[in-house]
Amino acid sequence: MNPSGDVIFSNFVNALRTQGKSEPQLPGAIPCPFSGHRGRIFRSIDQLYDHARTEHVRQLEGFKPKQAREFLGDEVLKLRKSDSMDVASGGSTPDITSLSLETEEKKGHLSPPCSGKKRPAESEGYGRRGKAPSHVDVVDSDYSRNVRKSETAKLFDHNQAVPTGTFSPQRSAMSDRSRDAFKSQFHTSQPKSSLRTLPPKSTPKAQYPHRQPGSNELQRYDPCYPDLLLQPGNRRISQEQLASEVKSIYAGLTMVETKCIHVDRAQAAAAQDNSDPNHKLASDHWQALIALHRTLLHEHHDFFLASQHPSASPALRRLAAKYSMPARMWKHGIHSFLELLRRRLPDSIDYMLAFIYLAYQMMALLYETVPAFEDTWIECLGDLGRYRMAIEDEDIRDRETWAGVARSWYTKAADKNPTVGRLYHHLAILARPNALQQLYYYSRSLTCVKPHPSARESILTLLDPILGRAVATYSHALPIDTNYIKAHALLFEHLSVDDFNQAKVEFTNNLDNHIGRVTAKWKEQGVYIAVTNVSGWFDYGTDNNALRQVFLTQLYEKAKNGPPLGEQPRTASPADQQDPTPPSVPENELLSEVNALSSQPHFAHARILTNDTFALVLRRIGDKNVLPHVQIMLSFLTT
Image 1 (cartoon, rainbow, N blue to C red):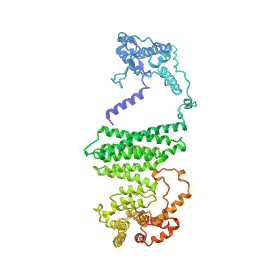
Image 2 (image 1 turned 45 degrees about the vertical axis):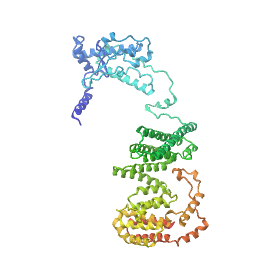
Image 3 (image 1 turned 60 degrees about the vertical axis):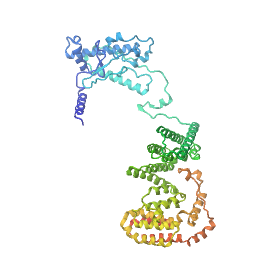
């Protein structure tokens, strides 16, 4: 700690300890009772005595120190008595324009006459301290500061009432107790001889404005505990008020949304038709576009808060899903403008960063305050993290950080909606350069209940380099992973059987040693291999696969016999809130389709690859690292 600070703190503590042991003191602020120095304020009778010895020697002539202190105390009491009597008799209050920082001698020459209009007597005690001048000097040898005082600055006076407009039962009770405590402390601190000579003193009652407290105010105070402030009352909002608020917000929202659509389309058309590639938008133009889309996001936020209010009716709560508000917010408020910014890179990099952070904060706020569409907000947060990762070219650590952020949001969304293939497609893109993990996510995206159409094209960016069609981008991948991916690439494309057998043999021959070498890492890799092998049985999600039709038939019958989806709570995006896809093969033809499937070569090869891998894993008795792979395979076989 600072040494000087220790000294100040110790002096302050010592002063507090010795305060009660010193000579009789007057509590609170003690004014000088002699003319010419009425503005001087002291904190103890000792300080007033020191001041009087130097400034008022004539008044103290013939007094001993103890008698002088008693004399000063009597004079102070007389001064305060005269001030209180003046307040009670309704003395006039000077106009605020007549207040100045000049001394009392100059005041008679410089101050203009008081205004002819007087304030009511009941409020005069609130704005001044008796006849004390406005120029007040606080004298304290330990805590004095040469700070210029404000013209309207006033010390608090326990004898004065609280200002008008701040009345409360609690404050009035506390002020009365404080005033009584001050009086008792003042009288007990004086010698008995001086107390005998003092005339009886009457304290004027504080005048409060007369008004009836409201019902909420009456409920906030308990007569048994007057100092305890209870919980304030609240006003319930009616259904009509909520409906009116939602309609008003929606009207403004549609206006801003229409403007955003028009502006984004105009800017996109201008970017395509512009013959000058070096044409740049002005800074104020970008800022205006950001402000417009920010306004739309705020309107959506208000709409969600109003429509999803705890007091809202079920019909009002369904409005957001009925009008696809989450999808509209993402499409018109965020995505279209992000694409416009992306096409203007690198000139728009700063504005794109600012808008990504703005949109991310809004989505995080909606994620916390509007849980009805939690899954949509999670996916939007993942999309924003992926945009932020994609535009980071300077710092590889920032890029990895934002990739991890996007991956965490997508993983959370996929755990909540395992039937949506779009989420696995996003995770596959973020899995680079882990080729095995990328193949796993692409396989899940293709074979889930709602496959993502773009995944069949995106997976070629992984398989083409393995098949030699493009430059290899996974040069650091292990040979065993390369052989495994090559085997599935040949199955995916229905290519050469000989090449498939060669890749399968190389993979199975090295698998046992590989599991023993990577140990615990194969817990995760075993899951990737098991899921990918199972997807080969479904021909990687092709619609005419017999096994897929069998599963779709069972799922469709279960959904048809279950409760209507409209009565179930929906948290996913509108694109996912659809009935299961009906099977394309009639149920009476499924058996013949399954029998014909066993004769297809690509299905037979997928089954051989799965069985050989599973048999090798089962031979590793006592190895806990293969249990995740075994669990997935047993779960699949039992279905």
